[in-house]
Length: 92
Image 1 (cartoon, rainbow, N blue to C red):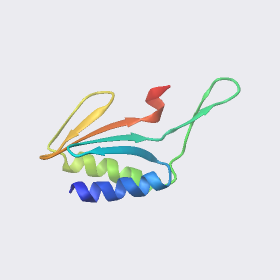
Image 2 (image 1 turned 30 degrees about the vertical axis):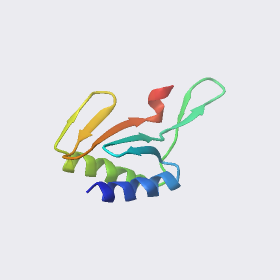
Image 3 (image 1 turned 180 degrees about the horizontal axis):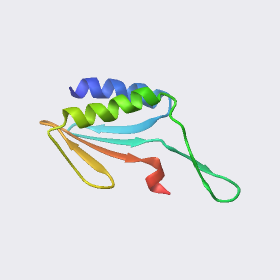
Image 4 (image 1 turned 60 degrees about the horizontal axis):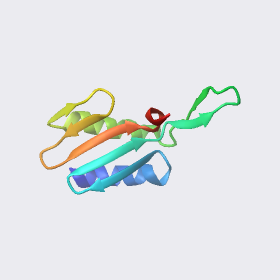
């Protein structure tokens, strides 16, 4: 299951839709949804290059995790690892 997720994340990383770090039992994933600011200071949201796969990853996490916790950054708990999900727009 972990390998299937890592394959999808690597594909999304190649097109710039995610940045992820795999540290054995913790995978940290940031979806790259923020592009920058306009000259007026308004946020520009970045459309995903592969939105279908982004949605597939999120569905995979929700449908296969044992449990999940968190409100802002969500922790998806699996039997032998945890996936921590955030979005680049959280960092602004």
